[in-house]
Length: 95
Image (cartoon, rainbow, N blue to C red; front, side, top):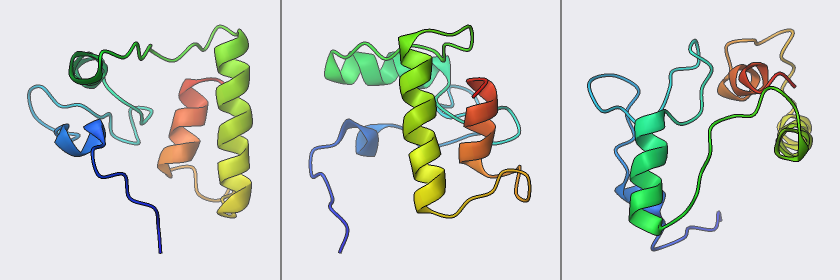
């Protein structure tokens, strides 16, 4: 049984990839949260989510390492399935 966080701010967010004010990008656009989604999440939680850091740095290194672990755990090969959201996000971060 999967762990479910009862008071997760993501449950309150509008989980849509189409229309005005959408919070998530489609896989073709690079997946991940749109700026509107980051703003809504930060407003709801008082957090400080930032946009992807494709230029390099510690945040990028950390994201690339975590996402590679997710890909290995779920046996995802981006050369065979480039349309997966994790593959699109890794392209956006330039991993």
